[in-house]
Image (cartoon, rainbow, N blue to C red; front, side, top):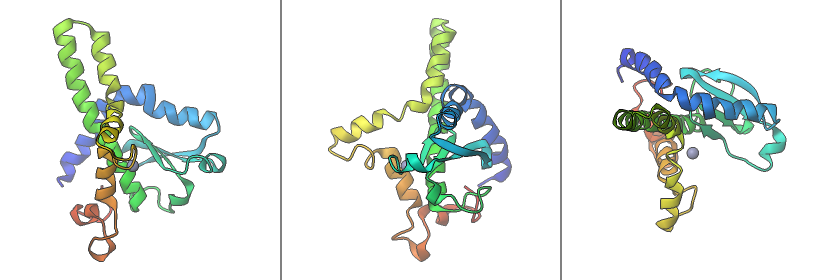
Length: 185
Ligand SMILES: [Zn+2]
């Protein structure tokens, strides 16, 4: 990994994600806190907003969940070093962050083309903003292939395959083997 490019690139990706951050990603976390679903917000590396589900909600929803560049963790998997991404769950959720970044760049391109063709900037901006939820059709295609709606969706399979430690050498995941340094993401 070229770290100098990654440093600047992460800011560029942050800008590409801004519309989704403003209308959904950060807002979902803020609402979850206000409505007592989550608490303990904090900034994680790469300007990803983190929080934890409250104990009462964990009894109903036991998964860590990523909303664009925000992650609300199941408290059980939160470790002592929130400032570094260094456990399988953190790595798994960060895969989802990168998946959303990819879709936001694609959505920007689609929105830009629509704006240039139609002159309708509201439609273009709406398309760009919607990029964060473009992985929802994965749940439909998964079901149509006969798979489990959640576990077998391609974005979940990718995140699981990259971060599962079982079956790899020395208990390390595929990501651990491919990172340029141990705690980089
Ligand atoms: Zn996942």
